[in-house]
Length: 334
Ligand SMILES: [Cu+2]
Image (cartoon, rainbow, N blue to C red; front, side, top):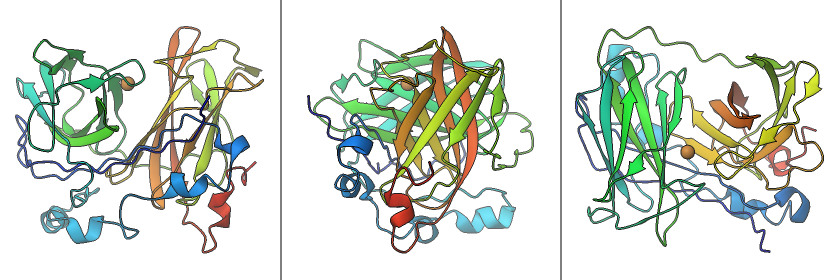
């Protein structure tokens, strides 16, 4: 069986599209997806690094140069100005229609309409992790997270009825794979009408101790995570009280799903664990290449005995050191 690590990293250009109820539809989009189906830590740690770490984007962050909204955001004193990276990549897009306009606590119908580079509806989507389209919905301050799966319709669009969260600015990330193509991430801004609560600060978690999520306690390693290089092996260890959980089950075709968004919301990573978890069945490891240093929010999703566990952490990802040695060894932090 071929176990070559795979990295799909795509930057998707977005046509200007005004969502219903959205004032500014000119947000750019970027998506990147680190997705591995292999076993890099055993098979080829050094050799496989270039393939996994090669950024599809220029080494310089695209944000500063390409943000047409920087000026008015700065003027408005926005706490988290989201840069708009230059479009690029495969050129797929998504038309997202929401009717009625999203309002806090109200249900609206979302229609996801994936489009080709030439603007036609994508004729067929491939199933990835048991679904045709994965919809990740996060607030700009990254305090809210949802992961949903719209249903395919006879006309080739996908539909989801969603009760919208509190008012404010959100990002919709659509993760889909055109048949015969590669995975695409399209990012769309969504405004939810109403009085928006104050943005919550993004506070880096102290990962030296476990974090409680209901009846579970989760630790996330390694302690030091750096950008670029061979990437990081994020390791979730899940316990119930002091005992490692024994009833971790596959969820959507994987032992866990890990979604990562950068503080400025321009970087989106979605990774899945190694197929074989080894003897420690309460530990799930994700190989992830952080494209740049900074704060990131990480959501690990697991099925523990039939219950959904979402374990979220805020990480401070360090600069890759000059020699690249810290990041090149995925086990450096162990
Ligand atoms: Cu999904």
